[in-house]
Length: 309
Image (cartoon, rainbow, N blue to C red; front, top):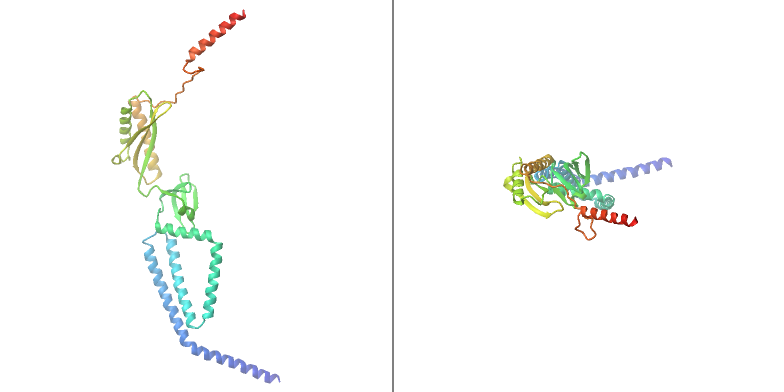
């Protein structure tokens, strides 16, 4: 009996293997075609990656973005080839399962990593639009400094005090950004004042000439001078001029030299930059001098002293 069971089992196995071989032989042409399709799409993927790289290097200098996008394009093309090959092999059920699984996984990852995805997309857009480059001086999200790096998640800047700040790309993309080095120019605004007793026309002329003689001031851009208010102790003015700008010292050195030049020129021309002046009024109705109030007080004291006697 055991011998008969063994023979029947062996026959079942042989029949099964024979069926597999027959099916394999019948599927062999489809298998060859599917393999050829995979090879073709693999080659297309490599060509597409090189094409994407050549296009992106003209748009952005960020190698991380270029590498990532070319990898994504290559994977998409190879993935399309895999799905076509599975369809040729009549594995439509497997294709459907893979697509459904990919959709569910993609939806779950989208909710779980939405902030990361936002920063990534923002980083890609910033790399393509290129509002700033490495070494540029920018101000964004209340941070001012030199751009050190732009990666897929953060914009990294070094502040003027030496700290390294990592700002999420989403925040940089959504908020106002000032690029101070994009034009290579920057305007300096100085505020000062002269006393009420000085000749205003002469003070204006002296200040403009003093600034015009400062090195690195762009005289061809013009020097603007405006009296803008009557202050408590002085008539105040603003003087504006342009300088070339690539680094912070370019701005602060010229600003400092301009202040020194105006101060020296005013001293040489006997123009006063007054200290704050305060007038003390002790009268009840106002307008009475201090010595008058003191004398009045003394007289009242004498009268009271005489009456007490």
